[in-house]
Image (cartoon, rainbow, N blue to C red; front, top):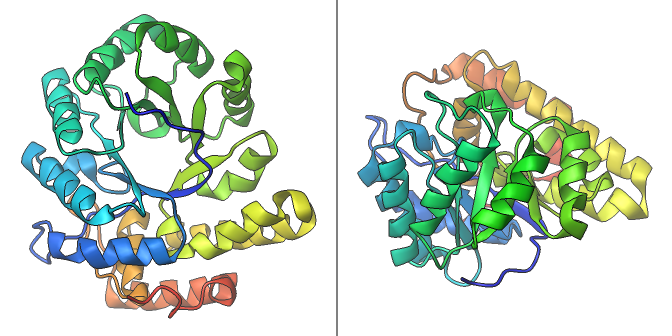
Length: 311
């Protein structure tokens, strides 16, 4: 297994580019990767929630992995989400990611027939991780989407004993006390990736070092400044985090699906990610115009000029 140090800084969760007819548009990814490198992110978490991974076919997810690994080079670490309701399918995705030299894998739990406790969740994760024996494995904790809200402290303890390649959790949840306990578990052994952009500063204050997020695709410079100011000037960091919160609220209030709205917004940075897939609803032209007005009012453009990430 590849030995990884603790993740520091930002990992973007890329949108999956699509044509207007809903087919994936892999031709966008080379320019997308250049944009993210220019924005100083450390890696990409592909095929997750932001990447509409569950809406993609197995072959599409494999094609997406191959393209990102091919274009990332040495500048971006590629973490491939391999979670699936089918254990066999999840294992296929894990093996494929290893064969294509991804840097790590991560997996959601099954979310239709859900695990009843930590033990079956650990066993599921063990089998998936074993399908890619040389890759670090992250558990992907996002109970708002999966409905699996088991104790992550207990999971860390048991997974560390059962899964040789287990390194940590992508923690996309608002429970900061639990996140802090996970950061401190086993003497700080685990790589805990925080996944709620609107709470990044609070997570930094309880020990976060690395984070994965949707809005890092287009607002990474703002978050880099939050990280820099978290210790040097906490009051300024708080003001900057407030801009991020207002920015995120603009997407939530846009009248369409926030993920689809973020995909549409990427055009402002020269990266055309196309529409979101059904059942997600896309923005109308009027909604898009109102969204851009709200984003400007949030103060985002003061920290991330629209031409900053042009490729």
